[in-house]
Length: 569
Image (cartoon, rainbow, N blue to C red; front, side):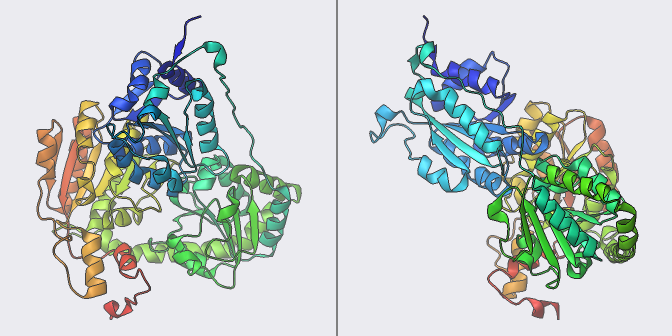
């Protein structure tokens, strides 16, 4: 019987796991996959940097709610992937990173790109695996994907030495497992306990996060808030699970955003976190009403009670849990009673929402030049007003301004780095979004600092025919760094904070795309019209005001417990 090559075993195993696309940058230690994937059903998408490849795989996973796949070569290729893997780890993104590594027979021989990779990556992945026998490649691939997507999702690392990949084995010695986990635990008793608390509450608040998104809780969540009349806020990948335009959805739960979020979490008597971690986004719980009862529902038991004591911790899948909660409300015929009881609370939040947005309108409608970041973000948000439109945010201050402005209408259509605060995600995320949804409009809003990371993915977008539109808020500086220095030190350290004027639009045009320079607020909308009508990868270089300080800069300045209140008078 003909022997089977390790590369063939790998590709066959990936196809069995329904892998459609692999994001990669080629290298000598991963030739076996390239060799056998070339004429297979798997598409290889090659970027200009390994970091971008992993970011694209992560974005793909976020949008599809399935495990993304990235492939990098040994040594430097592996090292280039680490930042993106750390980002995926912090965001609980299901992802498998496959890496080549020097052959086992060449260890400690000063071979090309030799590096001990497993110990380096182990702390920032859900599981790190190394397959050392060719006949076991299918087993390890099945294991990697099973671990990545089970329970609380996360990235898994799988390395295969080049001599293992190049091995030839007898077919009868190869096991080809394929395990699919289709059910997740639901705590019905926990739902009963929570419903008791809801019946006692006067001012409940629900916050749905990434856990709710990955469980597919879109419809059951919408049905539940309509059934009970409870206000909903969304966070992280939960943004858009229920549209911000829904009368019971009060948009982002981040308290710096203009709206009702601060009044809600500070005034609630029952805070229910659905797949949402208590992170710095909520000052680690310090913004919550100390008198409120806190309920945290999460598939990951380790997250329950982090940073803040909770009154009721429930380990459960979010979709199944909310469905069970809804079933119990119906069984007890509570819908009308709860809706009536919570109506004054809803009206209060609507009033606060309106008041805060009226105050923020000064910046959203600012007519000054250089242009205020929030005016730029408002123009993009107003233009990208279709349910199917996708906005990607990247940068420090710019991402903060955009997150304070974005109206999320559909789940998986607002992409940001997340808790890791990683710069450089923008172009890879946007490319992945356009690749995943070629008929949808994709707009990246990014800072001029962050666009420098992975800038050559503009060339990838142009080469691959991905007509994304990139709006750069160009204030000629590392804005968040500069402003944090002003707040914390009372002065600016020029080295490391100043960039100067860069004609990004001309650079993109030189690569074969389209470039537009915008210097006045009234030019932004026509530029967006022109960019999307062109059908080209387009850079809109918007000259923005270097002076305004975002809440993100203030937060950065306050790291380490520094009191910044004096800065505000």
